[in-house]
Figure 1 (cartoon, rainbow, N blue to C red):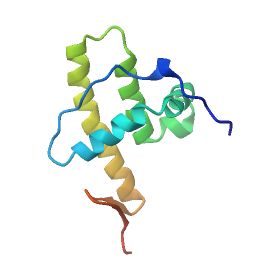
Figure 2: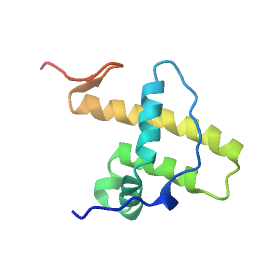
Figure 3: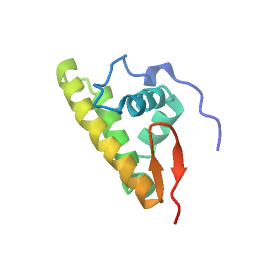
Figure 4: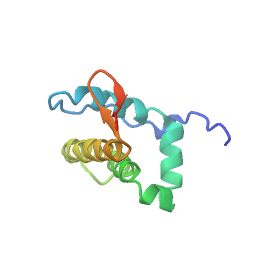
Length: 114
């Protein structure tokens, strides 16, 4: 795979998520991922590939990207929609980790003992 250069045009305008308990760690991870323009470009260019369509984490992250990049949604609506999508993204990540027999904790990623 070739290195995908940083693309400033793919960076979202700064915004924040509402903290819902221990979700601040997750929210900061999402914000860090949003600054990885190579990830954004890859997901947007390959969104119709089965590998991405069938992965709930990728699907919800792409939905979040669509909201962020939309010109037809007001900033207030975007904030509300992004808070809702962050919950769906959190749930899809935790479900994915459960399927892989991994757990997420505030302090570290751990492998479940089988």
